[in-house]
Image 1 (spheres, rainbow, N blue to C red):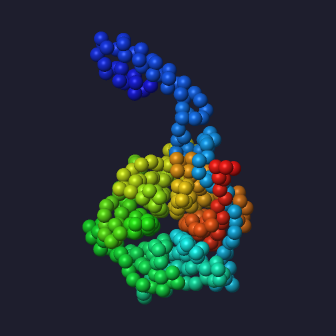
Image 2: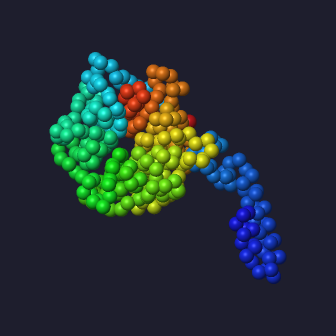
Image 3: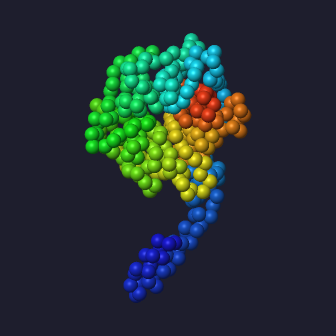
Length: 350
C-alpha cells in the first residue's frame, strides 16, 4: 500500500477521485491474496530469517547429517599433528583433501586403501595452504603466504604455479583466502585485503572485480568462503557481515541471506561454503559452532552442531566440501579433527 499511496499523492487533484477507487480494489485483492497460508498468494519467506511455514518439496531437501568417521588428532594417527585445519575438497572417487594451514601441509585421504598421504611442499619458504579444490585431474592449492595458486597432481606431487596474486593486479595488495573453480575453468577468489571477489577467466587472467569494503549489498567485510552455483553464478560467505551474498555469472548481485540485523539469523561468522547439485548451500560457521544448510530461496533447512553429541558434532567448523554418495567432509579447528558425514535428504516422494 505504501507505493500505491505515494502514487496517488502525486496525481493532480482532479484525477484522484477516480483513481482512488481503483487503488481500493487493488488493495482488497492484494489483501485477499496475502491472507492465505500457502500457494502462490502466500508471502515469500525472508531469506535467512528463521523458520518459515512448510512449503511444497520439489527437490531433495537436506534433513540430517549422518556421522561416518572422525579423524581425531591423536599421536598414533598418520596425519598427526593437525595444527590449524582450513579448506577441504573432494575428488570424484571419494578421496578428499584437507589443508593444515598452521602446519604448512596439505593431506589427502584415500578411502579405498584407508590411507593418508602428504603433498609435496612447493619450496624452501613457509607454506600456508588455506584452501584446496579439484579441477578435473589436478588439485589446486591456495598458498596465502606466497600469495599463489599452486597445481598438484591427484597424488600430491607438485607440478607448477598457476597464479601469482602479487603480480595479478600490481596496483592492489591482494590477500587471497578462499577460491572456487567452475566447470568452464573460471576461478573466483576471495580477497581479504581489499574485501573483494576476483573473477579470473579460464586463462587465469583477471576478468573483473566484484564488491568493495562495507556492509551494504554488493559489499563485503572479510569475505572468507566462495562456491560456484550450477548456473555459473556464485555465493560468497561474507563473514564480517554475518551473511551470504549471491551473484550471477557476470558478478551482478542477485540476493542476500542473513545479515547483521536480520532477525533469527543463525549465522555468526560464516567461513566455509559449498553448494550441492540441487542448489542447497552448506555453511561452516566456527563461532556458531555448527554446519548450517540453506535452501536456494534462503530458508534455513538444517543446523548441525553439538546437539549431535560431543563425538559426532562439529565444534568450530571452518571448511567443508561435498563429495560423491552425498558425502560431506568438515574441517574442525576446535576439535582439530576431520569429520566425515553422509547428508540425508528428504525427496519429494517422501
